[in-house]
Length: 335
Image (cartoon, rainbow, N blue to C red; front, side):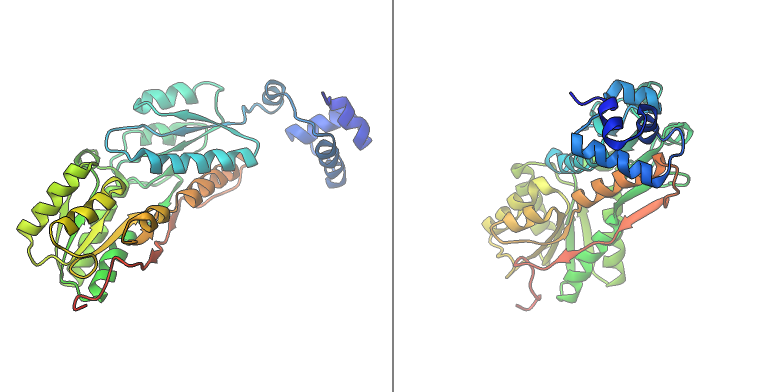
């Protein structure tokens, strides 16, 4: 096993200088730092985690808070988690995953110990009960999602309001006049989950601006629920020709249900979605969609946190603009 004394000998410095280079406790010249870093790379030296934490007063662990509440689409959430873990490792940090719905108590339990250096918080609600605690913590945090009041916090996410608008505007350009949003499960709206609420805001605002008739329909995450929603839409809105889907679990079952009810996609009904590209591409009729950039959001959340840990200023709000890709599921109204 390579020791710190081996690194010091290889770099031609004292062991204490190697320690200072690792901990940053005392200034050393850039030339010396480069020699130490080169020796570490060549020898494959890895400081003991406990010793490193003592030397730097850090654990090199980030907490990722993802309460796995009902209505959450776990495969998509895990895409965010994988991106966070992968990026954290590039910064020599591990990730502690917190999935219980513990609210402030769970956050405080972790933050009041030396377990983690900082926190990334997901499943943000518009009226987020954890905000007072997050604002008071000495440990830095980043939220993936935007509460109604984000002042003093660091937040990043897809601009879900603009995503809802982009889907409606695409349908409007194609000549569709009656549109519907098939949204997240009802409990997601009851909790006022921020991203779902903002999609509704964008969908409704864009439909109103374009003079479209519109409606919003929460949908449980099951094929049976998709069939019921499809039947309801055709019964209540017989002139319907455009649908926006913001519910990954029912995208394909919904397309199948409409076709079983006699509507061809896109001949009779154009369908758009907000979802991962790979899902949109995998449906039998590839779906026009706004991509869900989970990898980019997770990576940039960690980068923001690393800058905060390093004492650098970061923007409070980072909204990623929507990217809509046209596929086979949408067509002009008269097609």
